[in-house]
Image (cartoon, rainbow, N blue to C red; front, top):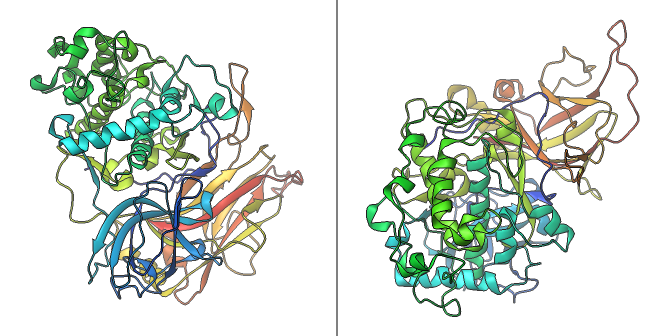
Length: 589
């Protein structure tokens, strides 16, 4: 397993991806376990989703089982925006959630979805469980298996999911064609969504591994929902094994696209590949060069390390890493047909298994140790990339949110090291409370004050922080949006002293926030690209001991700053709006 992720506390936000579709919301990962007791009634599908209303229990399931009609987290009761005045619901696009009879307990994996009224978006259906429940939030990860080890029912489910996706109109973001075109396409875009979302793959830079991990993650979720199989997970093609170098049998037989959605007839694939008479060679799949590299970004046979060199995000760049070249590129070229052309590669379903294997090799490269680490570059960690989830919503992720596939994205590979007994999920300690009539927090040319409520559990968590140095607390500024960068930035303070003028000497300084690169701007190709929504974490562990133990709330103050006069006095600020923020939270990693 990778070392725990520590998000950078950067003082000026320099990087944001603006070459892809503008997302409606950040993607909330990972999902958390939610325990419920029936009776719960799941309504008929509407708009592709079902909803299951519930009431929150006041304490975590580890302390007391939820009462009839209630749901609750393992370790705590609900907080902040999790509590909806109009009622709480579990929303599901996979048809996995069903009505729960009275007296029956179920466990599901969910995350709050701000796009759909802050519903609890179902990511994983565990099924019937029995109390007593653990107070530790544990959600068993999906396991990506070798295609050679799948059962006939698993293969049938995979075929069904692909077939359902292929049956959808190309304008549907959850359709197979739309998803394939995100990577690259020769199709002509006919909608703004297509124009912004298609032709987005990252090649020739250190974004290669991370972008494709995000891409497969969302495809996996769409596939699972399309198949209506809560246990379906994308397999991988283990062509390092000499016995698995022919195209996997489910992709060749039955040899009819009408009955087998995994089959591609010539010339989409070479006839010999479909027949099983041609296969990949040992030289084609050799990954020894990349696996021997120590550095992610430099060195190796191409000078760009195993993962690719530092370069700007774009579909094609010139800092190709060793793993991208060999075996990734070489396997694409050897397979030929659709797979041999970047604009059509994802149209062949074997694409997803090939890239799952490349993703698996990233894990294996890290597991070798010896100084191998992921990038710590702020742009790699914080640049956003936009995709679509199973609900058809545009959502985004950053590199810092996908480094550990198991603890962050809730999947592992069947030959990864054994899963630990429990996962340390990022824990939301407290979050901003929405102001009535205002859906977002406005950033203006005057100080902005955000209040974070504190309960007893949060106070205890902060009180014990200093005695456990492996724990970190971050202030997360979530979903930052702007149309035009203002002529000032913000200095952020956590719980500064009451009644004191805030300046550079005031205690509680967290860091600075600039919206410089979040605003819309034109790209080198002349196209006007939408701005990206950003979120950023600031490490505030050092400030935890300054928080009064008897306080009922924390204050976060964003103070606008710009130029100063000869004596250091602040110059007048332009009276223009800066943008908005979705929420402010305090999280523990």
